[in-house]
Length: 381
Image (tube, rainbow, N blue to C red):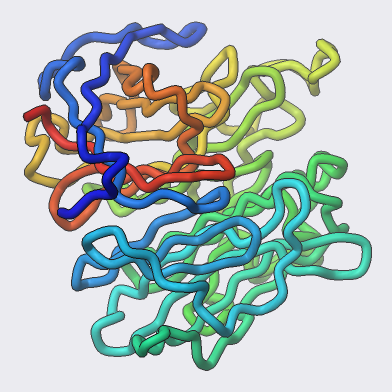
C-alpha cells in the first residue's frame, strides 16, 4: 500500500488498560503485544469522516459529515465528491453519516446511506439507496429515500444513523432521541430513539414486532435508546449489537432484540449533564440491561466484530471507537457476555468515529476532526 509521504513512517503505539466503573477489569487474552501495533495513515485531508465501507475489490467509500461521499483507491487516492447525493442537513451533529454496500453489490451495484434530511424546523434521520456508477468521475444513480423518521425534528443533535444489513437481507437502522425529546424514546408512535427494520426497498417486514399494534410505527424493532452510533451483527448468532451514548456516563452496548425496551430515559447508568438524576435509576421491570456500560463516558462511535486472520487471537472480539475517550476499545466476547476490556491507541490522541475490518484482515479507523484520516491498524513490523 502506497502511503502519503507524511505517513511513510508508521507509528508504534502503546495501549493502556483503565477499567470502567463496575465493569470487568482488563485481562490479557492473547493477540499482539499492546506496544507492537502498526498504525498507518492511508488517507488524510477528510473533513470529519463518519463512515467507511469496502467494495468487493478492496476500494473504499468514505462519508464526510458535511455531505460528501468519496471513493478511495487502494493506494489512498480520494475521488472528488461523488455527485448525486440529496441535500443534507449539516448542522451540529447532523450531516451525511453511515454508508454500507449491499451484500449483492457485485451484481446490483447498490449502496445504502444514512443522513440528516432537512425538514421544516431542523433535520430527521433518513435512509436512502442508490446505485454506484463506477465511472470517471463516479456518481450515484437511482437515488431513493426508502425511510424517513417520523417525529419532532432535531435542531442538530442525536441522529443515530448506523446501518446494518441482516442475514435475511433486511436493513437495521439506528436513530437518536434528538436530545430535546428524550421521552419520545419510549413513544411507539414515532421513530425517535429506536432501532428500525425495513426491507431493502423500505417496506415493512411482516414479522416486525409492532406490525399489528395500533398506534405503533410498524418499522420499529426495539426502543428506549438514546443515540446509537454503533451497530454490528454478531458473526456467530447473527443478532444485532448496538451501542449508544449516555449523558454523563451510561454509554451502553445492547443486543437489540425484537420488541424489547432498553430503558432510556426511564433507566440509565449515567446522570444528566447538570448532575441531576435521570429517571428511576438503573433497573425497572420490563426494561433490558446493557451487556456493557461505561462510567465515565467514552462517547462510543463505530463498532465491528473481528473475524479476520491478521489478528487470529482477536477473532470474535468486539472493537469500539471512542470520541471523548480518544481510543480504540477491544472487548472479549463470549456468547452474549462481554468480558475483559483493553484500551488501545490512546497515544494517538484521535477521536475515533468509525471502525471496520478490511478485506486484508486489518482494522480501519476514521478519525473525527477537520483534517480527518483513514488509519490502518496491523500487527507490528
